[in-house]
Length: 106
Image 1 (tube, rainbow, N blue to C red):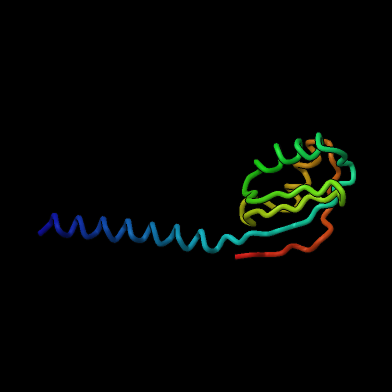
Image 2 (cartoon, helix red, strand yellow):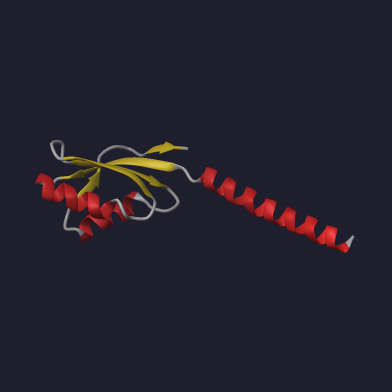
């Protein structure tokens, strides 16, 4: 009987942890922001940005448009922010500014 109670308690605990993680994952919304990067020219810049910014925390998708000089980034809101991404651009030697409001997606 004691073994049954111990196993039952462990199963309840594991179920609680799994449900908590599942709810936490649902509550983390993604944000899509378009940045203007005026100092970006040519494929070298595109590859440099894609190769570095894509690996910032929480970045889910990144699209570089050389013609418009924009970078569209979708990221997990609780892991990153526009300010942190602007700082990441600055580390690479680029000046980035937000040109479109954030679009939050569940």
